[in-house]
Image 1: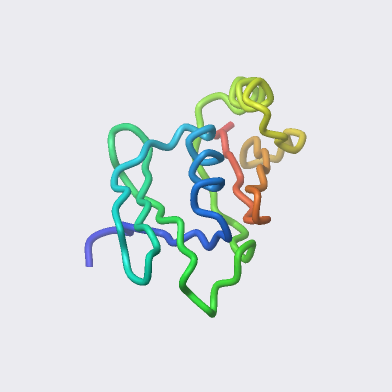
Image 2 (image 1 turned 90 degrees about the vertical axis):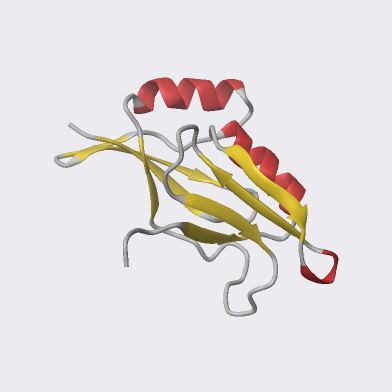
Length: 118
């Protein structure tokens, strides 16, 4: 094994979720027809790394079940202002001994945390 490649994010509406994740700074890597009329939507940050897919087909992963998905950032306060300008409603910044965190919830209730090191 080498690395984490893809994390599935369960959603109800792939297009609505895609717009949300574009607002977070993700880019579309692949958007193509998939099985049973669905789409494979794979997204990632510029420069590569771990990717996400917006999925609707896992019965054991209901939309909104993701919690603890953490994205590293260099300036969480700046990110907060940029997200607010895009109409995304992040939570307040939590300053902890191990860094600053800010939660953002996608349209289905999946919780994403932005983390800035101390």
